[in-house]
Amino acid sequence: MLKRLIFISVVVVVLTGFSFGSVDIHVRFENVDGLVAEDRVLFDGAGIGKVKKIIYGDDGHFLVSLSIEKEFKTFLTEYSRFIVTEAPRDNDRKAVEMLLTHMGGEPLKDGSSVEGSSKYEVLLEMMKNDARDGVEFLKREYQRFSNDLKSLSAVSYTHLRAHET
Image 1: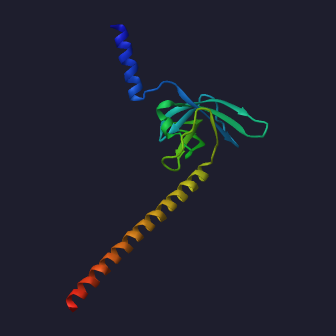
Image 2: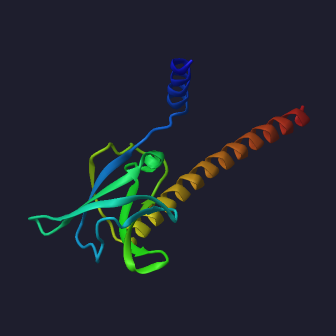
Image 3: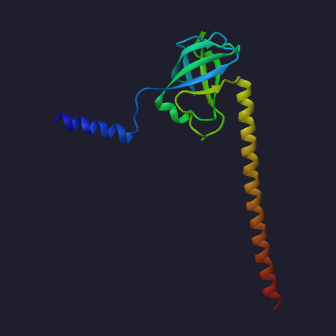
């Protein structure tokens, strides 16, 4: 009976995709503004991990190791950006905030290293993406409108020709 219960539990865990542990990401920042180990990692206002350690490199940059809960690994993509910010409800602490500049993208693997960003860099990137998406939308709408006009012209021309005879 116990073996059967363990087997069923394992099957449920595998089928639901539930996973334990975390994903480690390394972020290279020019400045950490007082960030320390154990500070939180935030996404959309929620805590999704913590700062494991901070190393000051020979190149004059900080390498910040983050531990992200596996439940949030689908949001860790090439479009994830990391900034150092004020910790909510605790002005004496800092946090790393993860922002998505675009949906989708290649997933970041456990142990990946990425460049940190400033809030302004992320906002500019998001605005560029929104503008690009808007232009693509306008192109599609223009093409649809153009096709509709061609269809109307063809119908009107056929209709006029039918009345001439």
